Image (cartoon, rainbow, N blue to C red; front, side):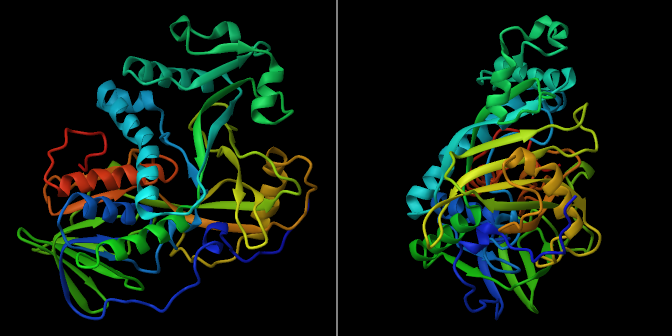
Length: 454
């Protein structure tokens, strides 16, 4: 196996963003109607829809600079599935609530387009049908059960095909009739772009690619121009404490205090601050809604020849939910000064956080070797092993044990709101959450949701 030394961490999304400008830290006490903590896709979307839907003043607070956290160090995918089977969510919350949550994520494609149109974003957005490879009856049954929930709830099921050579073809329960088609094995190979005949079934749905970091940077610029009297942004401002009282919220950062009527936490990957009530007691969510960060690792390389945009993922556990991560591959058109090129990205490995995450920590050479050996053949089998990668980066992903995003007001402290959790994959769920928070702050009474804080 080829070996690599540790490599500098370099994100292709941040590479397309503007150079760092001068710091804009909070320099004095301030007051506002809404304080939003975190200027990634969740925080900027929340600011966008709050300003659009209300007359409130908004102060957006970022510990680093816009989109330099999880948003600038992710896989850059447009996807709407959960990191938990939809049927399992339906078992807990009911089919109607689960389907409504899925519908909200699906509709976030339109919200992204709305934000792009109104902000004048120039970010390239590519959409296409993506594919996931499955090789066991367990894989198939899990996703066909999800299809039953979709069908019962009035959503179109994801398309599913099964190879006529699958040894489990005759074991598929009759209740799933109409949710899949039987095709030649050659069709499975074609969809997954692989000759690995271990894969015998494919699930297909709308996917896409976009640079969330650059999109957020442009959206922030628009907000500052469009709402100069109601919107303010500060960066290099680490929030240390949030104190939620009955009448107001105080956000403490850099020795200063921001007094607000509401605060929205949009810190998906980490929480360095503490959140207290005015008696000094911690305010926490239900155990299954508390963020636990992990580090995701990704690499990318430019193709020698242009290729069509695509997204594929490949399950590697025999049973879904095991310890072996799935791997994913995306291809997209990547704009650079010398012209557009095809960038192929791949990822899958995740590590638990051991101590503080360091954004510029080197990419581990042994892990790069492992990804080159195990994932590169899926991404581009014609690429020889051992070649250097054009980008390699890592980013924080904030998961909850319940694997359902948290959107809304704390049940006991309505001045404290959340839009966080990387549990619906991709950045579209963050946009959906931003729109929902905007509706709440506009005074709209939303029906109960699977995303409600508990």
